Image (tube, rainbow, N blue to C red; front, top):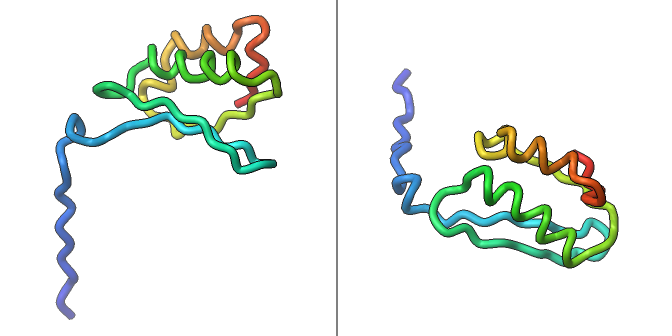
Length: 87
């Protein structure tokens, strides 16, 4: 039986648009931060801090385990007093 062939090529990683997105599960409201260039640990730290500045409710985060979201910078950010972020 012949096998299907699928072209798995796509744009280069640097050509893709990247954003951080947060959605309120109760209201459906969304907040986002567009990245300039590739995602990195600084952006992964900036987004929860940005959310905290705009909202005072508890934040629950679901990360996709990208390398920028596993770094020491983000682990230290999560320890920040007042961030009130649950992973």
